[in-house]
Amino acid sequence: MNPRFQRWLALFALSLPVVALSVDMNGVVVLLPTIGRDLGVTPAVAGAIVSVASLAFAAPLLLEVGKVPVAGSADARLLAEESARLMQEAGLK
Image (cartoon, rainbow, N blue to C red):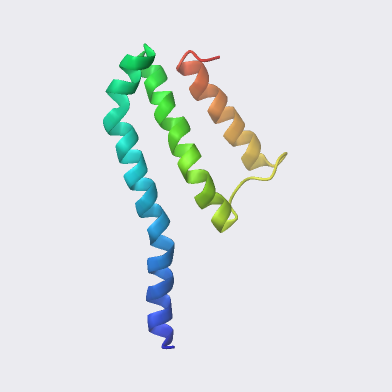
């Protein structure tokens, strides 16, 4: 197989999960007012719902490329601190 074709094929294969994530998140954002109204939550909590949903959808992509922070690493601590800050701002903690 041609090396140039292989590069394009790899780019296409790596782009498909990103497109799927974008479509999923678009659905969450479009349904956000309904979700918020049904759950009776504030806009801040509804924003946290989007953050959690995007993390849930993106986690497999992170696992796929091996970028998930190892427990105890500086990246994992930073992620935990940022998550706690967002939850506190949303009034969830």
